[in-house]
Length: 611
Image 1 (tube, one colour):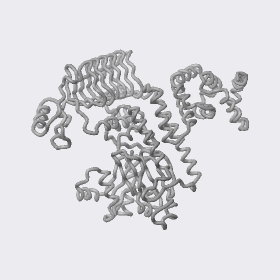
Image 2 (tube, rainbow, N blue to C red):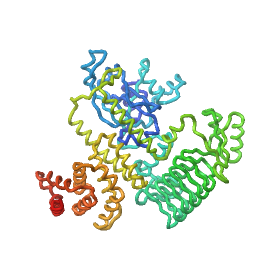
Image 3 (cartoon, rainbow, N blue to C red):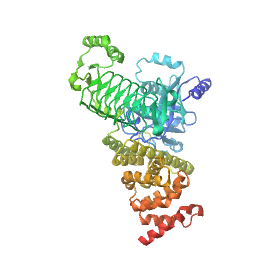
């Protein structure tokens, strides 16, 4: 993103109000809150912003992942006739009026307040005035920029300093502060959301990188066996050698790596000058420079191997393990440990120096090298107290199924808790306001539908590329259904669109080739689609979605409409009564809307006879 506009706004605001000491960059988006990778790795966030002045009036981040219920002080509502509330877990637009308050004279006034709850990301980019430096000097006990400094500034009535926000839409800005956000931002780069900051344009390495089909990036100087398979959304660095029958997908391979034969690498970040011998299997791991993984070794999801670690042959590194040549100190955050943990001090005399510091000031936890297999070298760091919960939350590994279910359950509980009439927060009871603008509701509904369909399509494509089980795909789409408050028919239409779009994107040279692609996709993913086709209305939604595709986004299907509809009928995706009801709905439609009904007349007549 360019900071030009944000800087200009900050300077103009400072000219009018000298107390405007800080401008925070935020970004509005609509990801799936239940399974979104980066959100489950960070604190829960609430913000309240004046939509007219863009002043930040409330900020709270919760490290304890507690229930998503927000209590606002009455004085905050009195001073701000309109507020825009932003909660990074629940994507939902609500309008509230206050039913009862301790101060009766505020009731009519507060009933006019409009609270819009939507998803907003804090990009952690701040434009600050010189006063901010002095504030840090005066408040030397601040430990957290947001939790202490920002929140402290908002509640300070003496100095009168103010914080404002600058919202970006099409630009990209994100913060990497744990392994999951590292994975998320890396995938965004590979998927070209950060253009022109993408591998083939920036050429970060020594040689040029070429973008190929399905998001594959290859350096020009690599050695790859003809039997090796490189999957989509993979980056291969210069000087890397890949052996026979090796499979790599959704991974980043650095420069100068040596990968043997019959190796499987999925969802990993392999840095530079790494040796992976024959028969190894790596899943969703990060491997730092100079690591040696000997033949037959396995890295389970979530593993982190630090610089120059050696994993012995046939050794299985357990999930979420962190392995380093350095021994793990018991105490944390001392200056000596920060120096001792510097990665540049791993080898040679620096290791001796680190060991000397460790022996003098720390008790250490030592894991024998034999625990990494024969010839292994490294120490497995144990997790701290209550650290097991954070392991999956901050890992590059996929979110465990039970954690997704837990997130969905929490979301359902929160929604039920919010709409519970018995719930009375300190500032009064919030109930739905029936006087909202119908136009705003309609526009927001269309906006939600667009984002919902895009989320379903992205989820399905990820399931295809990463070979995710159908049951897991259904689980993820169900979480989207809950977060966007959609019907089962909406899920059916969105998933059908994603499946047909996938078939269209698979290379084909003729109509027969396209039909074959459709058959392949539906053979593999039919169970997921039919789980949303339990009644006639949902099946009709699929037919209407197919019509829409043929007329607008995928006209290549138009000549094949009847053939594919017949195929869906034969495969028990749609039934006779759904096809006949679809025809009946079109009787009073315009001629332009009857194109495919007329095209499918032979099929409809045959269906009548069959019935």
